[in-house]
Image (cartoon, rainbow, N blue to C red):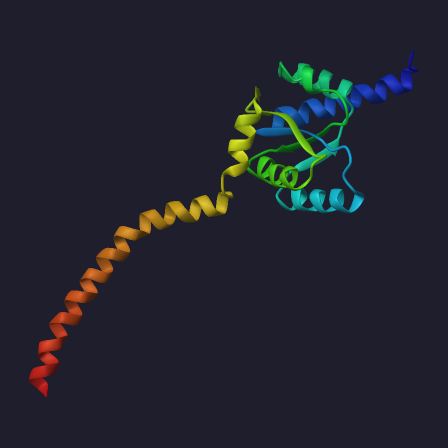
Length: 172
């Protein structure tokens, strides 16, 4: 049986994990077994730059935190090595980065995930992984809004250019 000091430390970790899960819009659980230190360091750097929190967690502590946060259905994937990636405001960053990494490494596998307080299946995580970044999506939307205005401006410019041609010919 663990000592009181160890038990209190574990309670603090569970409370922190619970808050992290509750505060995040998305979370992805991965099996990181067999990746090199250099690969792990590069992955952590990319996740950190995207605003994603990534940490190795103990399965039992994450199980307690998930239960406290109201997530049901993660128990069956909480075995082996587990790392948790969470993001507070970007739904696609964690799945996109981890999905790309999993495609290039045989031992690295996405186990499960959650979104907006509900456990989601791997198909949902993989679909999110294929979405472009937020900046690319915003640029696409703005481009769609800008296209009719640009076409109108080109049409007006063509009329102006066409109107100037006879005047220039008459001046010569």
